[in-house]
Amino acid sequence: MSASGEVLVGLAILVGLLGVIVPILPGVLLILAAILIWAIMTGGASAWVVFAVCATLLVISGIIKYTWPGRKLREAGVPNRSLVLGAVLGIIGFFVVPVIGLFLGFVLGVYVSELQRLREQQPAWQSTVHALKGVGLSMLVELFGALLAAGVWLIAAIAL
Image 1 (cartoon, helix red, strand yellow):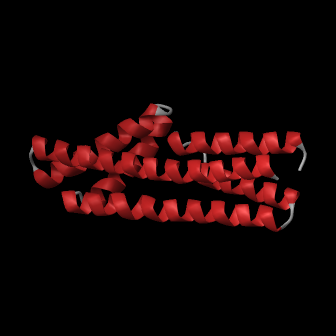
Image 2 (cartoon, rainbow, N blue to C red):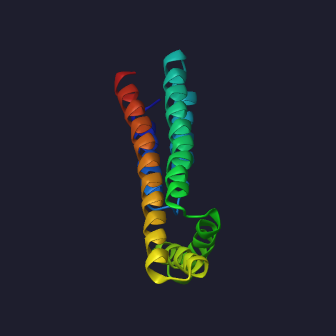
């Protein structure tokens, strides 16, 4: 692959990393697609091994992203219903108040659901904080996996 092609792949990976942090873009899918294109264009067994390693890292981080925070939230007693309502209001909030509406809608949705369930403000807010920690942990796990995959690709792009 030409140097300009590798720069474009690197930029796509960078945009994918930003998409992990700001969930507007399909971050992990963009990273995986960029590395796949790089492997196709570079060719050879080494490029495909790099793609396989990166894909494995992204899949493992994706599995951990959903299982580990979910377990922590169950331990804290936050029901899935509250998370679903938070997600729905987060999506609505994203369109009402661009970018920050996603966060505001999620917090409002979880809090309202927990307030309805628990009937007290303090426990409802504690559940909301647990949900926010779970979402933050999920994002960190996904970012870690994406950074590892990006690092593997960068090392391979320099070495190959």
